[in-house]
Image (cartoon, rainbow, N blue to C red):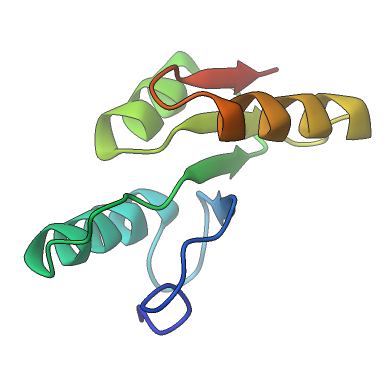
Length: 97
């Protein structure tokens, strides 16, 4: 499961919250556990993708360790602004509606 991030930190990983085998919340929890287990010096930045813009999904995304939340569909400019802002900031949670 972690092959794609084992040897590299990407600028941003986009995690769909609704997936058939493991939802995005569980996937990010597993990634965060793995990062802690291997003592990874830097956490991978992860943005939640969802068609639902509920307060619960936004809060859960932040709670499990995602740095951003964007609701589908989105405008290209909103996506670019979110990515640029999130890459340059280390601690603020970014939400795009």
